Amino acid sequence: MDFSLPESAQAVQQGVADICSHYDMAYWERCETEKRWPEEVWGDLAKGGWLGLAVPEEYGGAGQGLLELAVATETLSASGSAGGSAFTYVLTPGFGAMTLARHGTPEQKAALLPKLATGELETCFALTEPDAGSNSLAISTFAREDGSDFVINGQKIWITGVQRATWMLLVTRTIPAAEARPRTNGMTVFLVNVPDAVAAGQLSYRPIPKMGANTTPSNMVFIDDLRVPATNVLGELHGGATVLWDVLNPERILLGASALGGAEVALRAGVDYAKQREVFGRPIGSNQAIAFPLAQVKAKIELARLMLYKAAWSFDNGLPCGTEANIAKLTASQAAWEAADAAFQTHGGMAYSLEYPVARLLTDARIGKIAPVTEELLLNYLATQVLGLPRSF
Image 1 (cartoon, rainbow, N blue to C red):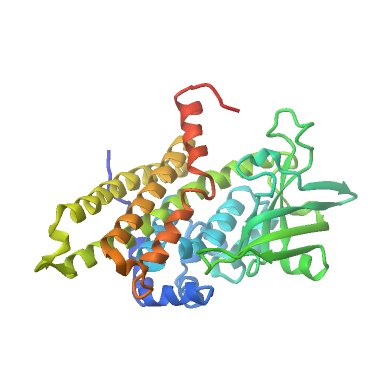
Image 2: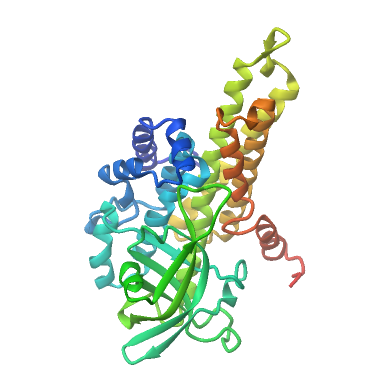
């Protein structure tokens, strides 16, 4: 067994870290406060070719896998952006480029992948609905055939990055859930040109006010008689569940990587403060009540990283990775929360001061325990699918 990162992933780690070294914590604080997309970092990532990691070489990308994407996401997050801002990276290289490379038609790939690699195009992913969150199979957004087109109606929620996206990966029902046998049948994913749909009045969105992660706005999306050509089906008609699972497992892994990087930022903030802050004539880090929680977090970060890399490696090698992806997301998010909480406690009363980043880090870390899937659903998967315990629903 070789636990070292392959050279390709090491190169990604170094390259992304070099870019991020030009942007300090104050930069990310400003982006969050101003609710501003990190345009400068995004531009540098695009220039360096880091947006095309998962794009095949014949389409102008690097031809790398999910492991390299996870390392890039973790490195971006650990640089200071933390979990909320690192989500910017997942939207296009993860949701868009990787999914299109695996499931797109030759025509779709030729038209979109080169521009996704350069950052000229951006994507978002639309699955969740007001009445269908964790139960993805219960979505009701419906696409009916009309000649060579489909007409789509429905509503989505918590769709991040619509404002910037050129293309949306829209998950619909083409067979109602009540009629589908099995339940996974009858789902279809469409590629939707967002600017064209908005201009035609067939798609609109409204930002959701959020307590954090404001560099990437999340939205309610309204779909009214949206007309999409059949050539824009991504994957197979009625077979969108295959595409969906190929999005959801990488999503768990990439957002786990984002959480892991956030944990590193929080731990670093806590350790630095514990070394510098003196009370009763000595650094507070010399007290075990301060040192031990930080040390425990370090152990949990390293354990979560092992599972995260195993999950990504399994995906890249065509092996089952559902269990690994769920464990990676669970443990990385827990490590992020515990790291942020420990850093907050270490700072004492100063944690409430916006002079320090721990308030943002705590807010960011809390996201991982509920999104994109709740901690309880991850545990339920492990209980029923891995341990074989009876289902509760």
